[in-house]
Picture 1 (tube, rainbow, N blue to C red):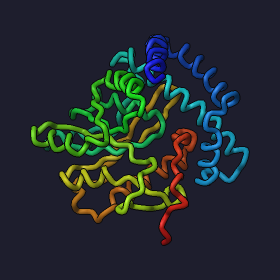
Picture 2: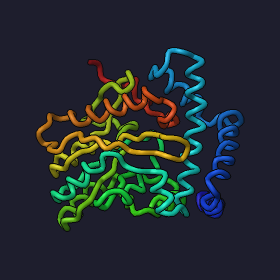
Picture 3: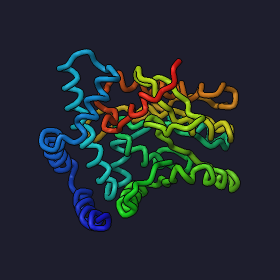
Length: 294
């Protein structure tokens, strides 16, 4: 069945990728209607997340945010498929970095970079960051259980220079790159639900106490790697910019979890400003009832 899914999706995605953006968004609008009104895809999860995070006090505004989120996330996935055929020139017109001199200055000092991002805005466009930085970009991700579909998405996502590393192999891979003295930028979106372990770090996120990923901070401290935050901004449909902010040039100077806290605070600020651009279909608060007491 998983192979059948792959064989159906592959030619369909190839076809979609060659559509002009105007037609692409026409089909995205149709898909939005089907997902939201007909199939009601993960509507209960999205509504629960919006309500518990209290991004708005108004019921009518919550519904507006919910609908705009579905419109946006449908665009994001159609744009991801477009990556298979889009040119470098077109990407540079639609996606760029602000304050990129921060990363270039680190490159001059031969420093690798931990790039902390979030599932916000056009987050799939982060994979084209290699067109804008001197480092070789590696994105740490969680592989899909469907190996055929995972392989297909890797093909799409690797079209513009970024490398994908399974989070299960990330530590060894980073050690190898450092031994070879390669100049790299590691991208990690650490805003989703972490597994509960004895060493889990819990903190409030959008008002709810949840387990938080700390891998970015641990890796950065282990190798004394500067940490930057990529603040994604949606300019208009299909156009994004990322504002680079320095979190810490010397991570070993910080107390445990301090860098993680700075990251989460920036993510929260981003979400509260324009909540419709966050990835609400993820079950972010599923461990909230297991949180230790303060």
